[in-house]
Structures are given as structure tokens and as C-alpha cells.
Length: 145
Ligand code: RB5
Image 1 (tube, rainbow, N blue to C red):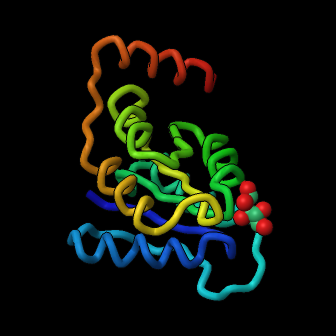
Image 2 (cartoon, rainbow, N blue to C red):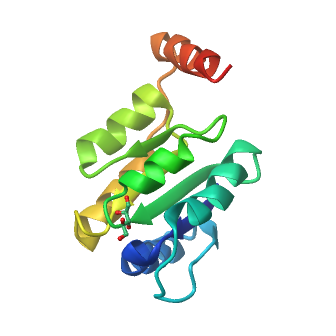
């Protein structure tokens, strides 16, 4: 599995924590920055991750900003991206089982690194259930036009 990851300045610290976790888990990833703590615009950093998942270069994406909200809104504008904003382990599992989410957004100002790590492990380790949920994903895809 190949992951694309980025944040804005509000998510820099948590992004580094999650990259360390991915290293520990031996999961390959590409870091799309930012490489400084300067204030940046989150859509600029959501784009390469969302595009990379949309075009199949990456299997999954992880986006972090202060709340996770801006990143999730931006990522969901890209065709083929199903970005879930998640701050609890139950939702991390459910959004993989039911929504086949391919991008995970989290807010560094909302949760701590311990919970974020559990969310990432659960989200990466849970398979889509398919069945009736696949029909619903097809209907989401139809909404993209
Ligand atoms: C940046 O201050 C903040 O607005 C951003 O990280 C994010 O929370 C936006 O949704």
C-alpha cells in the first residue's frame, strides 16, 4: 500500500507523528509537505494528495490541518476522492467498511497523537465490505457527473 500525506501549518506536528507511525509499520508513503511552519493555504497541499489518489498513483491519502475540515472539503472536490473527516476509532472503521473512503482527514487541534495513531491504524487495516455499500458508492460516483 502506498500512501500520500500532507498537511498545512496547523497540521505539521501531527503529520510528523503519523509519518513516524507509518515508518514503524513499514508502510511506504510520500510526504507532500509543507517543509516549514510558515502559514500556507490548505487547498494547495490537499491537491497533490487528492490528485495522486484520484489518478491511482497512491492507494490512500492522509490530510491534516487544524480541524481537518478545510482539507476534507478541498479533497472531496477531486473526482474519485472519498475523503472522510475522522476523530474517533468507530468512524475510522465504519468509513472504510461502508464508504470505502480513500482519503483520511484529521485535525491536529482536535485530537492528540495517540488517538490519531489508533485512527490511522484502524483506517488502514479495515477492508470495504462491498455488497449494498458498493451500490451507494456507485451513486456517489454518479453525482460526480
Ligand atoms: C489554519 O489556521 C486553519 O484554518 C486550517 O488548518 C484548517 O483548520 C482549516 O480548515
